[in-house]
Image (tube, rainbow, N blue to C red; front, side, top):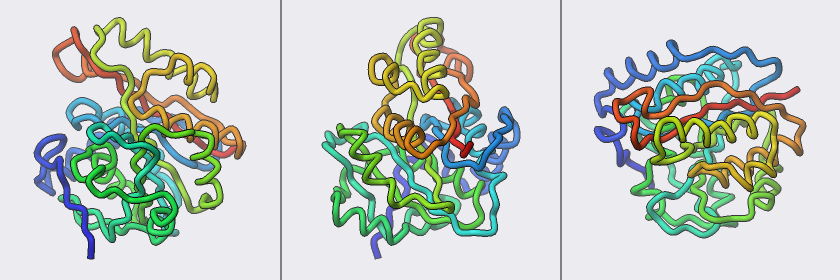
Length: 262
């Protein structure tokens, strides 16, 4: 059995299970609550250290937590590869992911996709963008399995078209991304407002031209899917590390957004 052990516990988040549960639940409970009109189809969530981006991520997973919990959800997680020069995608076809909160089953669909798209284990073994979403999922959904996909440079329309047949009423997306990196506090807000306006408007042209996000390939793929499937997008929350930390000279932006049926 191939199990992916946590690589960033005690770095991006605490490795103590009781403290992690308390912290994540507080992020979800204390986050902004934005009412959505339709059925939730997915969220875009940041992936920094929890002390910096956790409250913004909480607004995304608050939406997931209020979903119907009576059915097993398939969660497609799209995260960028920061450390490995990945071209295309790597579908993380482990049997399970492990976090301090326990094991998470990987869907058999992941193995099917990996047989078509590939699985480079090393690309994920030292990557945080998928891992940091998992404790939030564990405390938002009672019963789920994941389809975790690392993304490098890729044609986003092709990716969207490839994933489309795997989407049904019990499938949701989690798109993992931060926004701008290492600008001043004021400049970051100016730059990140482009994403904060373009994503809810499903304005793919502006995102391609001017959007600043490390996970932009996943974001764009989800935006094209939303346009194709008739979903709407909503802005949930925005902060940067100047709001949640102390240094305002070089900040990272964090945005949360939701997709829902019309």
